[in-house]
Amino acid sequence: METITQDPLAFGVGARVTVSVMSDRYVDVILAALDAADSSGLVLETGDVSTYAGGDEQSLLRWLTDLSQHIAATGLHASIQVLLSRGCPGEAVCDLPGGAGPRRVDAPRGRRSGSFASAEWALYPLEDAGSAERTPDHMREIYAAIETAKASGTFVASEHFVTKLSGDLGRVLETVAVAWAGVGAHVQHVTSHLTISLNSPSHASGQADTAVDSAIDSGAEARA
Image (tube, rainbow, N blue to C red):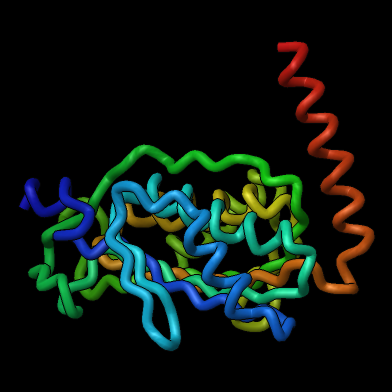
């Protein structure tokens, strides 16, 4: 079992991503973003609906940030849907028995992008049986994930079926990855869904705030 948890592909760690760009140049924009994103250490498969990326949590976060940041930098209004999964007990390339996990990893570390993002996020701890040390309680895990978002500064509000996040694009992605991996330290099978809005006309004030925050952070790093 330990060997399975140490191998992210064997443990079914991965993401599916769909990018929608509100422009007649969407094909060129999406393909350029896929080419620009650093996919080292990952397995990628692109289809007509989404792109699958399989690999460890840190590499996935780096790739997702690269991809999303490239889209954001075009200035075009876009939406990105991300589905994360780990520890699945029976999907296409993962046939894990119950009790194979959990998989414990260091919290993925993201980076600031300088681009504003608004997002809606949901997390699903899919645990049928607990252990002698920990009984299954999906709401306990969900509330722990929401507390992670609050601590990150990206939490906006709890809404119907989702948690609203906003702020720097890189920090939003980091929040989701950290919460997903954190719950996965206790629960074998965890999925998470994220919808990101970029360059929306309604984001003008948020983009300005993000630019100021990034400048402040850059100055603080320069003085450190």
